[in-house]
Amino acid sequence: MYVGAQEVLGDCHGRFGTEFPIRFDFLDTFDGGNLSVQCHPRPEYTREHFGEHFTQEESYYILDSKDDAFVYLGFKEATDPVEFITALKTSAGTGKPLEVDRYVQKQASAKHDLFLIPYGTIHGSGKNNMVLEISTTPYIFTFKMYDWLRADLNGRPRTLNIDRAAENLYFDRKGDYVKENLKSRPVLVNAGDDWQLWHLPTHETHLYDVMRYNFRSSVAIATGNKCLVMNLVGGGSIIVETRRGLRQKVSYAETFVIPSAAERVTVTNNSECEAMLVMAYVK
Image 1 (cartoon, one colour):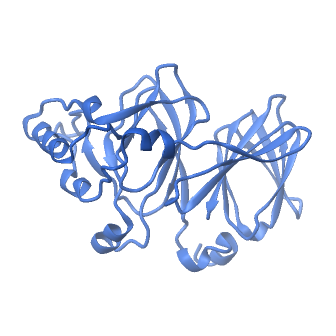
Image 2 (tube, one colour):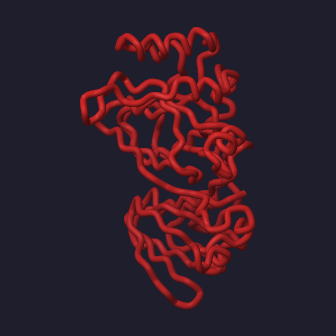
Image 3 (cartoon, rainbow, N blue to C red):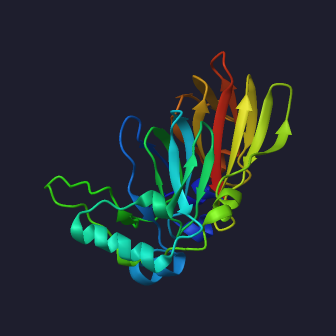
């Protein structure tokens, strides 16, 4: 990034400089427990308090899940902000469990769902999900409100940031708004004999967008002066080839980056089943 950020980032280099803007990571709760209930700061709060130029904007791509899997996302319609914050602090002070389901919605999750988590939105993965988390890349600012009374490695309650969360939560992200606006509805953009290109729209405040290629043989992908972050979410493996003939094998669930300067690549399915390739880039 320090010697070739322009070549890597393309049209968003002026905004991000040497900072890489998008990351993919995994949240694995299979046969485990729920993740902490949390939110991320609003952009102006991030700038004022932490000196970061952008905040964390997430989405959960469900790579795999069990039948009973869900994510916590958004408030229930009747949730009162003062009552909720008071309940959080009472739980933290007394060590008594919080009735999370009383305040926060649970959304059933299934393979290839994309849940949208713009800044200020209460959220957390439930158990039995393998989440490919697509996110922007500020440093480490996540405000945890409730962590199921779990202890840290020293046996003490894990650190919470209830007051900071209260200053950043959008309590109007509740009820039907969550169902209508915080789950992506795929739109078919283009198709050929054995391939499809789907747009998985993100929230209006997300700085990145998401697409997915479904294909049996091969597809040609142009960077369009953008940096493309990809993950093989379906199929066994693929071969990625640049216009100069460089080839690399990528297996299921592996993440890779196509820098803007590559201009275009050809991606060939290396297995008998359909390949599914998720792609994110700065809007």
